[in-house]
Image: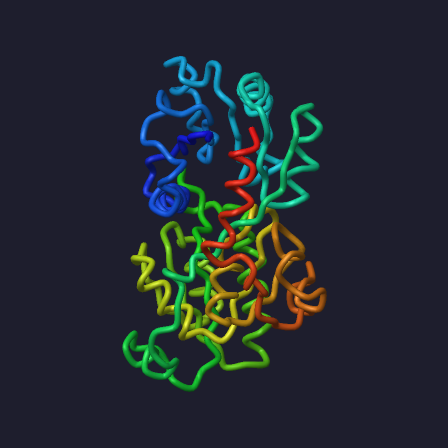
Length: 299
């Protein structure tokens, strides 16, 4: 039986959580060091170089996960790194067809599309909406919109991270505020761009900076709508989390949107989309691990 080592980024990011969940739930085929594995899963594909320098990718089967590609940031350097890593890669894993189509222009290796898993052990109903609004000192009678991802570039904490669509988010909120009495709940770090625009637009908001996922789980349950306005995504994870917690979503046509939402909820003119709850029931654990296990064991 193949044994797999899954590479974490060590960045206190969502991929570290993925690695932890995988290792805890798949102990029969997972090992804690690359030397003990015959399959290396580069789940943090950007962190691959130290494994190569130590010779730990030699004579191994290598699964390289590409979470997403931002075409505008696909520089010559990024392409050269992809080509350098490609020589070690046995098979690519992606989450959506857009990513598969993009990287297919730069490799002849097999590309497998496998969806994210939805961890219902983390994302789960707790208290009633009104009780949670009281807990977080949020208005009880307003239409609450949620946004829980970073939106500002780290190099200056001013410029919008355009692939995440923060400009489109606030454009949408400004339109929505004309027909509904809204309040915005922001969570996560680097929210400076959205905050500055909400302040200029005089739209009320509450901000929770880098909350634990237990708090985020509760914040999902206070909101009435989660808009996904990104220009480029692998997921986003918010679509999965909203699906588990039954939060209505409107989304641009990006990432996994077509996999989990009806066409009526997807529109690049986000104000024309009709809110709907993502369908992720078949992605729950442990069922969702099986396609990954099948891939690993087939190599």
